[in-house]
Length: 583
Image 1 (cartoon, one colour):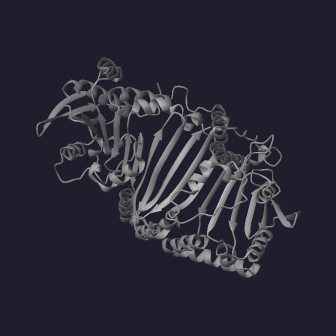
Image 2 (tube, rainbow, N blue to C red):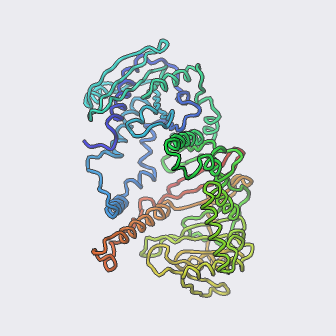
Image 3 (cartoon, rainbow, N blue to C red):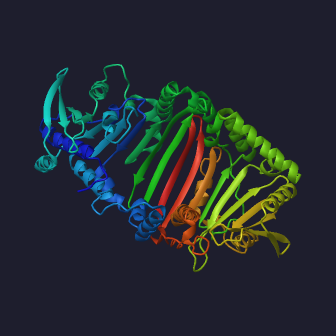
């Protein structure tokens, strides 16, 4: 069988499963706390609680619905064909093989934790040396015979045992069918926890942490763990990434490469670190709670004294407006505090710090545009946006699968904004038409193609800039404002979010999962199709024979899923909560 999973890693998983079953009878009764195994500064940690329940509920999640969507599979196959990517062979394994392995492990251990002790690996085959896996053996029947059969079916390997302060360390030397260097797996059972790694030092350090001896502190005893668990609660799936640790490894690798080839240095890593604000980063983590009818996700990006581009992940917190022009027909809508001028200044300063030459070019280009058009783009456009950004999507029109974008924000000086935008559109050579809706002037712009997003309308209504793709979106907003149609504020879940932590909110959103899938996949298909046309040889009749249009998936498998999300500020970072419900 041809598998997308390296044979050595499959061997390793089988060996761990067999070891767990073989050692079960002698496992002590001390309850496992798997978070004691990784180091407090581990770059990546994944925690799984109640794996059998995760597997049972997984098929009810929107992720599984998306993976199993036949229209999406057909769309991906056609898109890959345009890109010249051959399909995987029928026996490639993929998700089915991964699921089968997880099911086998779950019969032995209901809880597991996987961590990277470092990221000094260069391929899947060398990943094992950085990996630490811990399984909560618990109590109960284990399918020992099945695991032995599984191991023997894959092949035999050398086994030996070493002593580590009275604890047996089992060593499995796993040969590779390709004849390459054998992989060595070290594992031990401490109390009811099986710990394994491809690196003996990592295993021994993990044992010391569980025993609470040695030099390193465990993840369970760290502020990282306390902060994460206080946020995600009883999540079945948890993920934590130590941004500082990850970037330190990247920085070290870049420095070593630079030492070998000094003339290749285009950008200083110290400048990148400062411009990105990496030194102020803490953790990025999230937890997932699965239920029969909904999926909840909670997480955060922690930081202190944010600077550089990190400021973009630390938006202003406070009360949010409740604009009356958001019609209930919007399948997706988002309202957030947004400092446009501050965002632009932050990006500009970061580019200037990383690559001063590029920053100077951007400044020169903006100055040229200002002089040629007689406007001040920064003041007339960005500074003019009055602290809030509203985005949304209208569902596809009849006999269409293409959604229409909606955008709105309050303005300090509407006339100056309209004049500057009009000059930008004219400079781009795009024709502009106008029509009246009562006393409101609606302007429409089109690039003359039929691709999604090729046409939009905009208008100024009561000091708000409104824009919508296609036609009719602004009309719906105006009718809603006049009280002629229902608004999103009739949705009790959306109102409840707006009332949550009013002093700390940064933004709220409600959207259709189906529309979000369309927003991601349809433009991707359009881009691939355009690239296929542009790269076609001239003798293939590129100008006269367009590439076949990719059929847009309907994503009907996601039509019943609605997503509610809010994010908020705390002293140590920006937090979020998401609920995916099934109607």
